[in-house]
Image (cartoon, rainbow, N blue to C red; front, side):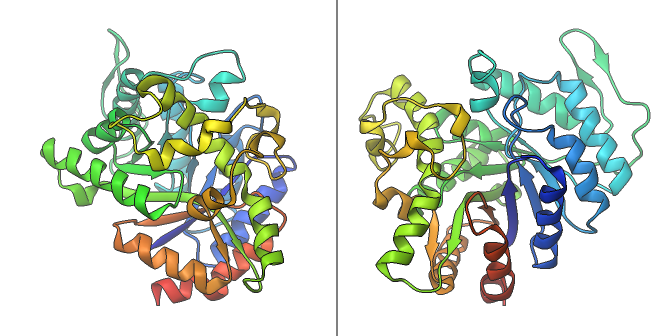
Length: 339
């Protein structure tokens, strides 16, 4: 199993770079960041420094979207980094929750994501792409250029499209039941589309917090540090409920039931521990969606995820133990899972 580190690009950028270097030293192979232009610093500028200061780390957004940048600009940015550092980027893409809403826009449609994925992937590989009637190609791309495009999804139509079109699937939660359910939906869609399902990489991303023991006090602190994640996921779940209803055969109740007490969301606290808009998230959801507890509990859950077909676990590291989590994974968790 591969391991990734997910960070927000809060200033100073030097700290983001330092944590990514630390992650690579500890056996992580991917470095992901949020991509929301109003809330955080520009990630692609920081990627160039992460790549320059590491040797093997693959970097990318979790996730960009097709609405805040024109597609040829997105593709050119990835392709330039790949030309400089040797095919070490991945394009994670989705509807654009915070990036679009904070700027007063609605998240992108699936149809727009589908079109964007095709254009960005083709241009990033040096192929031609149609920009709505104008066919273009980057003349400077060298042979052998690659740009995998991984799609973030929760709902049935998005999962289907991921299996049909994306190079990878990003699932932002680590609940075993929902992971099995959604991975199956993606793989089944790939098969129905005539694809080899093993070619669709599966990335589960969730907060991880390693405690010294499993005492009530330690677990309570870890839950409070990771509770923000249930609120972030709840934004996407709320969209699904609005579309399909609270109890729909199209969306599992295990995903939707917990947002009944949700009363709104302030993006100024997005992705941060102590977010006051996530008090509605119960401990049960934190335990299911995140990975918390002593190292052996992490190892147990990650092994279970791997049995479900997960190729990468990406650690959301937004809490008060960033370095400690990276180091614990490097010394205890990653060797045990991949040993």
